[in-house]
Amino acid sequence: MGFYEFAREVTRVFFKVFYNLRAEGVENIPADGGVILCSNHISTLDPPLIGTPLNRRIHFMAKAELFKIPLFKQLITVLGAFPVKRGSVSKETIRYAQKLLAEGGMLGIFPEGTRGGGGMGKKGAASLALRAGATVIPVAIIGHYRLFRQMKIVYGKPVDLSRFAGQSNSETLEEATELIMDSIRKLVQEHSK
Image (cartoon, rainbow, N blue to C red; front, top):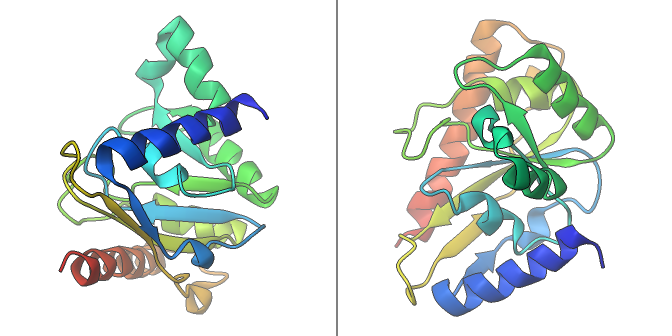
């Protein structure tokens, strides 16, 4: 068992004991191939929460400042994080993400950008998905991270972006992004009741 797998087992116990985590829709995650998990963002605990119920390794972009802390840099790198500068995504970061997806990896993205982003999505997830031909899975995190209160994570069915294939203009990316965001919103609404 590698360190990532060990860490996942630890977080499974942590989220089950302290947040009574319930996961739904895990069967919607493809067993292989490039996948982008697009989720709402409510807490710094979201990245480990999203990956905890899954048997596939998940990678996240993390703010570059976190990679300046020596031991923390080593930890998050081993756990699959890679750096991104706030406000601008470098070509190097985009190339790394595309390579990861092309090799059948799974990437977690918060299209709102920041926690509680208010619903407007950034175009990066749609752009990466269309360029790499990756499957996009909407994810809803439901709850408030209150100790011993239930948290729920719902993995939706893949978002159909086929009508945007081969297109990458700004209007197309806006439409694809809105489709992804709408899928996330619907999951949150349906499962918050």
